[in-house]
Image (tube, rainbow, N blue to C red; front, side, top):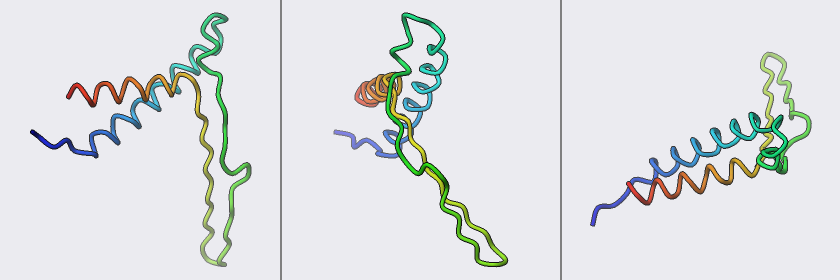
Length: 83
């Protein structure tokens, strides 16, 4: 039995999330597909800024999980199983 590479799974999952989010944004204007853009956002509302005098570091993270991105992750998992 061949062992599968987890980097491929990570790449497929990220691709599924990004493409699913993109499709959810496209479906936002269509009335019967607007449910694809339904979701929840979480993360930092305002970025964390660290000023060290000569160096300024800004940290920020905001994640929006939508129905379309969940569907994209499921398709990515099915694709990984078929590889």
